[in-house]
Length: 295
Image (cartoon, rainbow, N blue to C red; front, side):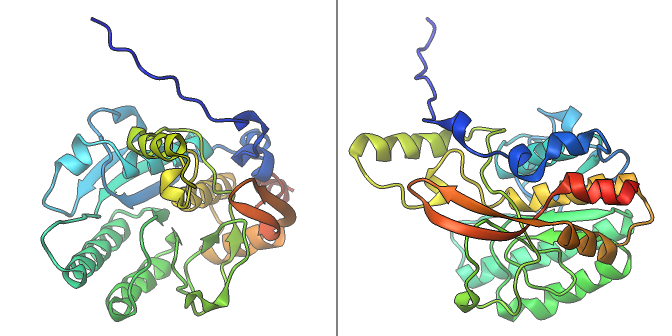
């Protein structure tokens, strides 16, 4: 007997902005598609065996190999976003994130920092071009352990796009809403990235969304919106960097950062029922950046 599945419905979805309308991705693809650029996604839940066409290679630094090979989730989502932005780049699935029950928050953060350092060093050894990471900010007490690894990556010419990370050599993406200095970072983000995403649907997120809607409860968190994503800012920006790198392999991490900043523009961001009308500066225009490189 065929199981009935409730239709998915997102009101006014076609009226919303997209990566393309904000960053001009389709026009950029006429100039570059990321061919040959090696991008590592540091995450978990890649389902590499179910989606082998998406990945060039996979490696695991946690003891749960199924998070690399079988289980679908955040890592698959990030890889799919990256593939959408830079469809000809080489994606490396780096399984280095693990959420564990039964251990303290401090121990969990310590293990995650250790896995992150191993992932960065692996990327250096395998001569990757770009690294992307979309998880919680690194606690201050673990920065002396993680930041030297980021320094090593920068010295080897690896560009990093880590969210919630104010390291001076990180190309730091932020969303289209006002940055607040009291958030505890040491500097402002570099560029702003459109952070709504439609390319993959997480059923559990949709279930939470439907339950809230049916109960008449307000949607309080991005985790409850099926089309909402802060995480995608990192692979989107990594994809933009891959497009630039494929257009001119001589571009350095510093020149890519400067180029994206200098060719950015400002928009007015509207987010019904979530954000008020806000000015959004330093929005990446990847078409304009590529046109500058080509010229």
